[in-house]
Image (cartoon, rainbow, N blue to C red; front, side):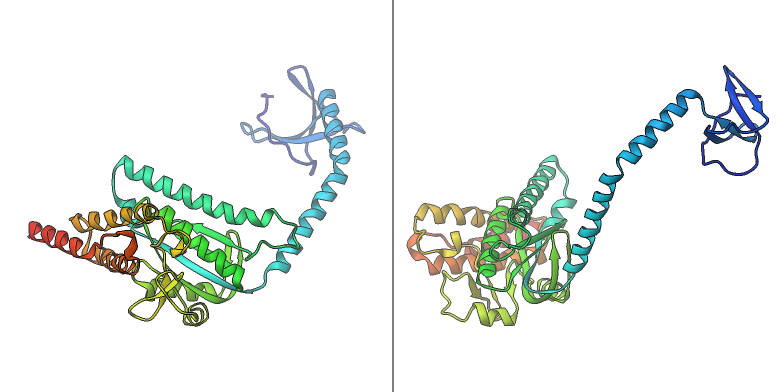
Length: 347
């Protein structure tokens, strides 16, 4: 009989019984009491038979059985822990009334389709920045006991070029959201990217990577159907609530021409009056001015994409006009001239 290539399964069925004797297999008339057997199939001949365990295999099986039985208490504890986690997860699957922002990184698709090692590095650095911000906010939850929450209870989820950020519907949540938007816009602008988004309030479930609810759909529709330009806008309800006080150039939320309030991201620290250093303002706005001018001169920038930078230029000039003491240079007129020259050169 040939030496078998075997697959071992549990003992079952009526098959001949063999034991090893050196390199040979010896047939046994009956099973030996107290011994283990494996059901073995010879893939070359198609024979199936029981093969008696050797003494070494018996010892190994006894050891594995003892280890398995010794581990029973730990398995029971782990099973209880997993069941408890499952119960907690199921109990947590309830909508909360939260403020949620759906954010999209403008220019991401165009950058991804571009070629060049520098583009790969830029995209990687950008995603690393976003992941760092996401990890920061989500780690806040882990620093406190389960029955406590960080002020505002911020949660962030990132997928590709989109971000979902939600907070509790209170003043802590509003302030945390505004700070997060300032961090995100500051990090993205240095890589030439802008944010567009919609913010609303309503029923939402959000726990790290899991997010869904009517409020998310409404925020997405605000971003995709209403915002259009590189701005993060508020729903009508939040506009009335957050924009109720007198709005100035230093307000976190300022009106657009269409009446929607959007996040005032260009002034450093949202125009906080305590930050009046001229160099601080110029360091914040000069790279944005250069970004606008570079897009105006870019013959590969489609007109529909450049329209977003025209809006940004108008917003930039508005900030310059509202803060005349910082010697900020307006940009729209120069950008328009550069763009016209680029168009004439292509014609």
